[in-house]
Amino acid sequence: MVSTTYEVQGMTCGHCANSVVTEVGAIGGVTDVRVDLAAGRVTVTSDGPLDTDTVRAAVDEAGYTLVDA
Image (cartoon, rainbow, N blue to C red; front, side, top):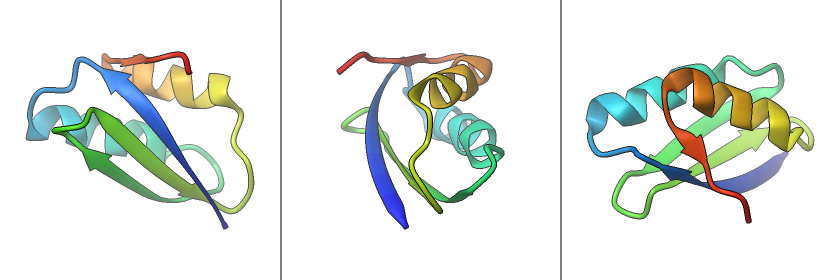
């Protein structure tokens, strides 16, 4: 299992968090998605390393922006 935390810009409410969880959770191999709304972070647990561009696309589909490290 691999856990990676990403910074996401634009999430302001529970609906925002649910949208991100739904889209990121649909990525193959993802086993858990947790959002820290106050910190603007999303922690993704998966079977193996995820491609950042795949996560970025899912976050974008939810309507938010993955912040570059």
